Length: 223
Image (cartoon, rainbow, N blue to C red):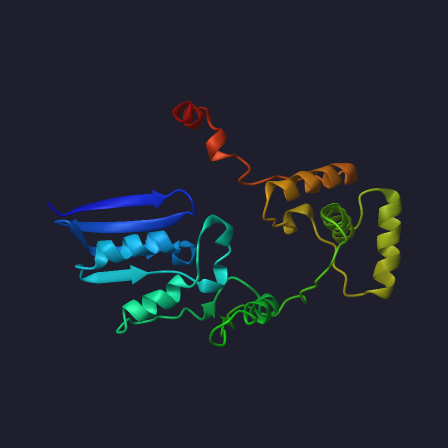
C-alpha cells in the first residue's frame, strides 16, 4: 500500500518526504539538501534508483555544517547522476534591503561556482557596517554600546553625549528597543551578550533558547 512517511534526520535537520511503492520510493523530496552527508547521498540514490521523481531543495552557499559531515559537493554529484535534471533558481528576494543583499552577494560570490544573482524587492535603507572586534567579549560590548547609542542613551550622561553627537550627525534617528534585534550563531555568544546588556541596563527577550534535548521527556527517553 502506498503511504506517506515524514521523517526528520536529527543530525543536520534535513527533511525527507517519501511516497513508498514496493521496496523503493516512487517520489522522493529532500529539503535542506546542502546539509546532506555523502552517506545520506548514497542512501538517497538507493531509495530513488527505481523511482519516478526526485525533488531537491537546497542552497550550496548555505552549507555550513561541514563539521557534522555535510558536503556541498553533493550538488555536483546530483548533476552528474541526473544529467537531465531541471534546475529552478530562486533569484527574487522579498525579505532584505538592497544594501543587505549587495553585501551578502559580495560574500557568497567568493565561493566556487557560477555568479550569484539576487534581486532585492524592498526599498533602500541604511548601509551595512562591518565592525571587527578583538574578541568575543569585545563584540558583545560593542553590541550593547551600539544599542545604547541607537535608543539615545539610558542615563543622563548617555543622553547628553547622544545629543552632542546628533548635532554633528543629523542623519541619526533615535529608535526604541522594539526596533532592534541581535542575531547570533551560538549559545556562547548569547551568554556574553546577556552579561553586557545587563551591565548596560538594557532590557531584552531571547527567542528560541529552550533546548529540546534538555526537556524532561527527552532526557527520560535518553536515559
